[in-house]
Every structure is written in C-alpha cells, then in structure tokens.
Length: 116
Image 1 (cartoon, rainbow, N blue to C red):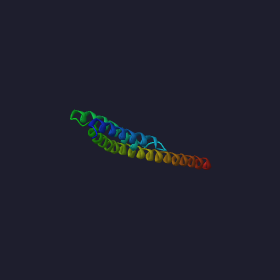
Image 2 (image 1 turned 135 degrees about the vertical axis):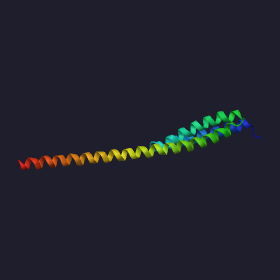
Image 3 (image 1 turned 60 degrees about the vertical axis):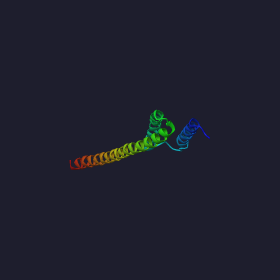
Image 4 (image 1 turned 180 degrees about the vertical axis):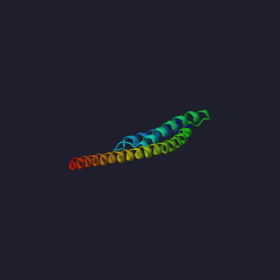
C-alpha cells in the first residue's frame, strides 16, 4: 500500500510536471489570460497546500486550491486582456482620426492658397 506522504509527493510531482510542460511547450509568448491562469493556479496550489496541511491533506488542498486559483486567474486575466484589446482598438481609432484631421488641414491650407 502506498503511504500518504508518497501519494502527496506523487501528486506534487505530477502538478509540477504539468506546469513545467505547459510553460515550456508554448511556441509563442503567453497571453495575459494564460499568464494569469498560471499565476492564479500557482498561488492557489500554494495556499491550498498550506490550508490542506492544517487538516492533514496537503495534496488535496493543493489540487483544489490550484484548480480554484487557475479558474480565478483565468477570469481575471480574461478581463484584463479584453480591456487591453479594447484600449488598443481605441488607440488605433484615435491614430486614424489624427491622420484624417491632418489630411483635412492640408486640404484646407491648399484651398486657402488657391483662393489667394
């Protein structure tokens, strides 16, 4: 029979391996949502381990805390990423409007020069 501490070490090894595989397998930079998910999962797992240790189940606490933390991190990261995308779209619109204003100013200046 596998002892409780061996089971915990096995679970921790699996979680750490999954985290490392996720981080190193990415061929492109992580999005804000993905970064927040990883950070939330790590913080949740750490907090879950501490809380789980107080009741004698740090492995279960780490698994539950990691899942809840990853979910919370994903939600927060999604909101941040959506806001960043909206800001980028607004900045693009502002830049386009500045170009239109500049062209209109140039046209007005040419029209004034032609009238003189």
